[in-house]
Length: 68
Image 1 (cartoon, one colour):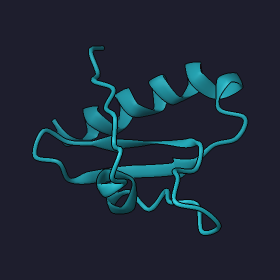
Image 2 (cartoon, rainbow, N blue to C red):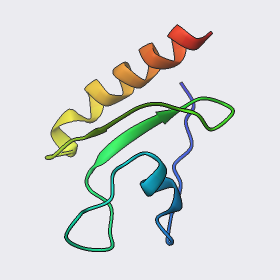
Image 3 (cartoon, rainbow, N blue to C red):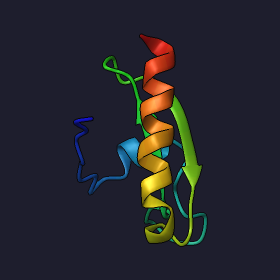
Image 4 (cartoon, rainbow, N blue to C red):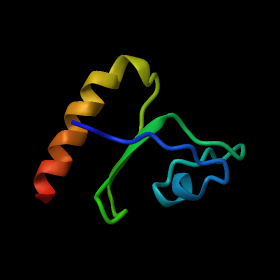
């Protein structure tokens, strides 16, 4: 599965996927799955992120497959 990673200095996408830290202007640890049109299919806060990375990729692939 190919997937892009993005940088979001202005937190525009982070706000769209509802992963903004309420205590500071930064993102929460987590992930979001978007379709090709930029619609949010899923977003989840995940901490610690590293221990869940393999599960996140599997979950994202399943979410995308539901849309196809």
